[in-house]
Figure 1 (cartoon, helix red, strand yellow):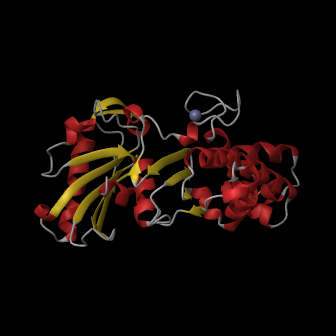
Figure 2 (cartoon, helix red, strand yellow):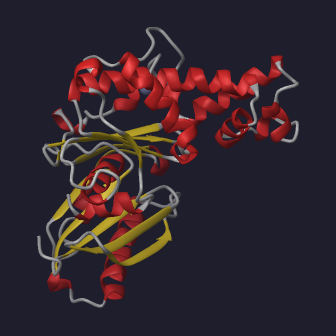
Figure 3 (cartoon, protein in one colour):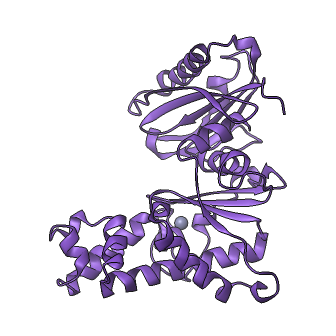
Length: 317
Ligand SMILES: [Zn+2]
């Protein structure tokens, strides 16, 4: 691919609308962010998506004719057959004909895709998994987002509703999940799940370092508090983390068995824990994974692009 090729990528979130011009070497030439104003109507928000896109092209200092494509990551599944955006919670949108609002508003071919899928594509093309064409990515944050790249292309399944690794069943009839089901991986492996487990556990262990690090206020416990307390040798924190990593390992081992990716990328707040997370995973994963004794397990790597992954992935849809 030529460096002198420019693409426009947009990351639509509930807080900000961000647009970037990316060149053929995956370098970001310009990046513009404006508030999403999520309380507003769809005409105003989509109008601002167009506006921020134009602003990014202007800031890059290149004419629109030199831009070859426009890709947008949205916080929802997009049905590629009907063109409907299925459900964007932050905007209160359900079954919105999103292409109707955006197609033709810039003189560029338009693609729209789920934002977690865009992030996975970005990390596969230009980030932690650069050079690999079979990659899974999970984002361990408020929920668990995911994307699947097979042979260098996103896999999204029928009606674009697949690739939801966060909602695969980890425990039959287990913890309730935000999706309405029970026992999903997200209910055990999101940052929210880790924090909730820790807040509940300190009730029976007021002596725990977790509570001390949170200033005695269980409501102030976050993911980092648990990792920090474990690093100080706190037995409750170590046991909570052990349980958390065991559940995550069980999920990843299943995904490896199904897909045999060349790498798994972990993003989101939890992935910032570094070796405290990745070291524990590397120790457990071979013991739980089919075929590990014969062919090992693929590397589990921290995401490297942060929020730029979604922009680069969107640009290269
Ligand atoms: Zn779920």
